[in-house]
Length: 85
Image 1 (cartoon, rainbow, N blue to C red):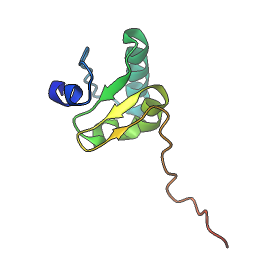
Image 2 (cartoon, rainbow, N blue to C red):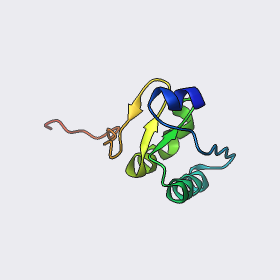
Image 3 (cartoon, rainbow, N blue to C red):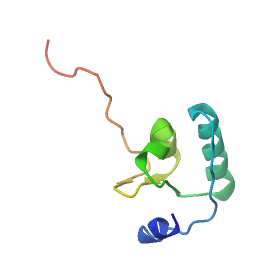
């Protein structure tokens, strides 16, 4: 995690490990982002942040091993039909 953070110009300040559902995980992440004035959340794999990805990118950058999702990233809406009927 530290190497991944450094690769993207971040310093790992605090590690949070949760064994909870997305609601509690979201509260914990939001609290830590606020308390530490963090700019990014680094996860070891997308699946670790996926359930709360919208919350994370509303508050910070989401860094995964495969991609960086910027602050304010607009997630695609799955299942939404935007074409003509």
